[in-house]
Image 1 (tube, one colour):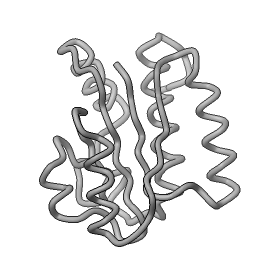
Image 2 (cartoon, rainbow, N blue to C red; image 1 turned 135 degrees about the horizontal axis):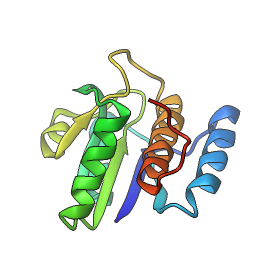
Image 3 (cartoon, rainbow, N blue to C red; image 1 turned 45 degrees about the vertical axis):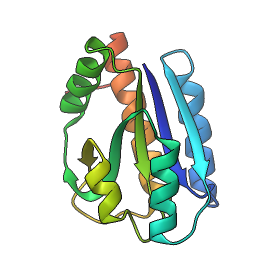
Length: 146
């Protein structure tokens, strides 16, 4: 299964660039995870671009109003999608104004990384760490500790 992480705008903050490079490198041997960027803009424009870029994927809108999975729940969802032959999963991160209602309605899942609002570049690094963590669980690695 391919995982796409589609984000509005390229990261500009140093810790984001460093964190992404770190987790992209660690994910290489574990699974296909691709970062893709769409042009930033208004909420409506970014949401439309994210929907276009995720066409044909199981869509997960990252939004503070979404479900709050534990790491083990995240692993169970990913494993289930793999078993049901889902080919591509797309995690969608909007810009500063978040997602439009239309994008949230079009998403298969709305997921949060906590009930607080998070700066979107920080959310991207946290999401990449969680994707890495779940991949290590699937691979039987001792990285995650319950």
